Amino acid sequence: MALTYIYNSDTPQGGQQINNTQSPINGNFQDIDTLMAVNHVAFNTVNDFGKHKFVSYVNQGSDPSTTVAEIALYSKAVQDSSNLSELFYRYPNDGTVVQLTGSSTSAESVTVGATYESGTNPSGYKYLAGSYQYLSSGLIFMTGNIQLPASSVYNAEIPVGDGIPVFSSAPLNIVVSAGDDRSGPNRYGVTIVDSTQFTIKQQNANNQNIYWIAIGV
Image (tube, rainbow, N blue to C red; front, side, top):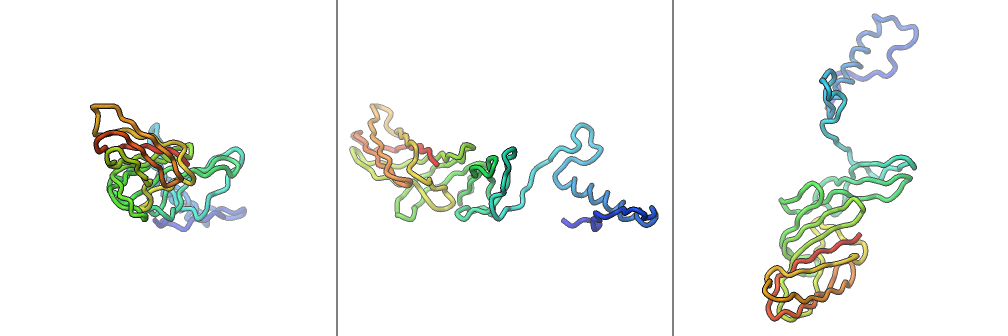
């Protein structure tokens, strides 16, 4: 969007006559009104004037610096995201940077976090549908489901690629539950291997559709 007038920050100057400055001053006031209308409620709107209608961000090339008494909310590009930008905030005093939104190639993406669909990661592991969520604490919450053969030990891989976030270290915890066999006890053992792998040992006598939840950073 271009301004109707070229904003002039040097008007008026001392000694200038009003007939020489009326036009640029009038243009400045109109530019201010135009700028406010981009994402604010307009002047002279009862009760709501000055409030935001929405907030839009221009991508930052790097994380902005913060002082000891401020926090920054901003957007920037993420290499592994299918979006052109994601939303971040930074704690005071150049503190921790936390990613708030995510993306995937799925059409079911939502504002904070997204779903991923059945597919294959670079290691060739077949995964079923799941979802992930960025939490304000800096943690990543991820879910998924897999199909296990009866009485088996299964080396599962956490999906990667297609904008799916990757844990920086082994998840803090992974919990599993059965989706198919509700008639008897569900007996599972989970061993976390690293940031992309975990082992499930199941002792049920039939195949199982297993749902898992992982949380980590």
